[in-house]
Length: 339
Image (cartoon, rainbow, N blue to C red; front, side, top):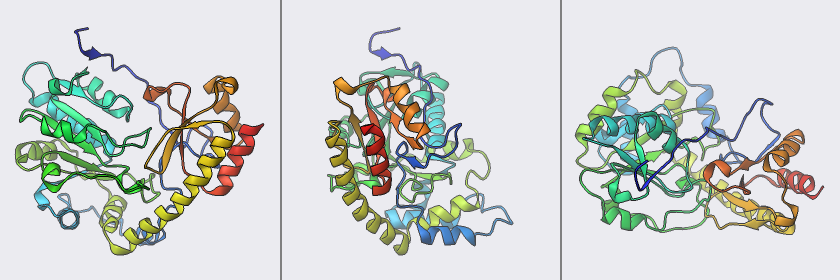
């Protein structure tokens, strides 16, 4: 292995439903615990599934473009954020001359690494050497934005493709610095609203292309399978920009902020160390004196109907990622851990 290249062999690990079904108290995903959005559920209930959607999604792309203030030609729909991660990785690999490299944050979504591995991209520790750069605002599992994001943008070269994963931006509970319009126009922005809406069972996402990326946009559209979005995904993404859905989201963030303070207080009562986060999830570490095998702890909690997310696959062994849940779930977790 050459210098500066790090192994990307990882197992695919996710939170949520598992072989035991859906946990009663599931802290392991980052979905909005107040969801699903009621207005969205009603729209989904009356969605016409009797015919194919428009294969080019003209109306959907127009509404998303209007909301983001961009040209509709810059909108690329995707079956999910994960599908787009794999598709753009494949496209960059195919279009690059010579050895293709990718860079992503040390603690971030494992599909960046899985996609790189699948399409033969080597991981580099130096963003300047990367053909494909992943950034997050904020990132999972830590729930914080990248400190060096603006600096990376200033150093971006014409040969490089940079994608900002905005999956958890709508779930930020604290005001944080945002990129300017001019900065956003230099990079791809990947949006997957199902987490903010509490509808992770519906897959659907979209990306906003940077200015001057017409050739890459064309390639990405041609390499997508037919109808990447079904009727329910179209409904979700179209309703995502409506005032009533956005009002529900804003109200849910107020409740999540209150719940987050309460949940963190319970963790601290157990002497767990809580890492800073601006999102609806955070990482916490049990005290060394109480620490047991993570797999054993997860197994015990799962039998109690509680599921946490071990962060070993994120490169943080010994810690857990917890989404903010309702007080009833928090109390159940506190009692289980107290035992």
